[in-house]
Amino acid sequence: WHNPLPTLHLFEKRRGHHRCQAPVKSTIQFASRWLNLGNFWHRELSVAREHRATGSCLGTRLVEPVVRLALSAFLPSSYVLLGMSAHTIHHVTAVTAQIGQNLEFYTKTLGLRLVKKSVNQDDVSAYHLFYADGVGSPGTDMTFFDWPHIGANVPGAGSISMTSFRIPGEALEWWEARLEAVGAFPETSQDELGRSRIQFTDPEGQQLELIDDTGLPGGSTAPWTQSVAPERALRGIIGVDLTSARPQATARVLTEILGYTYVPGSEGSFEAQDESSYGCIRLIGSEAHRLGRVGAGGVHHVAFRVADDEALTILQAKIEATGMKTSGYVDRFYFHSVYFREPGGVLFELATDGPGFASDENVETLGEHLALPPFLEGRRGEIEAGLKPIGI
Image (cartoon, rainbow, N blue to C red):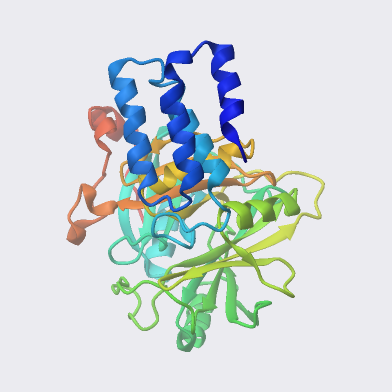
């Protein structure tokens, strides 16, 4: 790729694409001349779409793959992707077998808002509940699949073992008393970066913690105040603990793809931040000789924030260039995603900030009714018939 044109010429000759050679060369030449990709994707993607529309041999088989290769080859690992320099947490998705109890704990005890009551788009027999701040801001939502017959979570390699929320430091004492009162077994301590924290569990044993976010950038400015006063409310998700089967390989994904930086002197903390967000991932090497198994009280996957579809496509190309497989582009309606399993066994998702949870509901009435994306709306009757009412 330092001199891509001769290699490309041989590829074209071998495949018999002589008449398509010039557009591909211009794509690679453009990428090699410009590392500032702010306008690159708009121009080169339009080339791909033009050839697809005209039925050229470059239509779907050559131009877009070449664009992806060019992006992955020339994009530095530290490059700021189209306006978002920190791929902090977008959401964490976990599993519950007790949906009513789950709803009560996360809304009444932790004070989060149910911003979307929907279904698992890959298993419409199951609810998918989204808890977040008052307006469903990216980076504040903890979501749950409702699988009532699943077994308990089994910890082990390739799993997410802790989810960390951020709170104002002055609220720590209040939260300790509140969690003690509901039997959540709170324990106070300091993390390895010197921040005060409370570790506790939800009713199904989900490992959670609240961390003092004093001095950290970002955090929700729109707390939900029906159960907890705004000065004490959870302000988003700081990060997760990853129990990795291959911690060194996981570390490379965090640093070379997602833009995290190892915290010198720590046992395995990685940070990412910009002026409006902060994330911290703790990487733990597994002492167990078995892989974890996702179940009730466990985490299914963690999603990292991406600004928009253009940045998502660039990051997808960068992942695939390493040899890792991805799901490809997935339209979740409320956000757009790419999934991949990192080498340590944990399922990662990249998720765009938009369109957002207010795409099909008013902000004032978020979560009050069953919301279905347009591609499932035609099955509403069937889906509703298969769901049981959620009781608290």
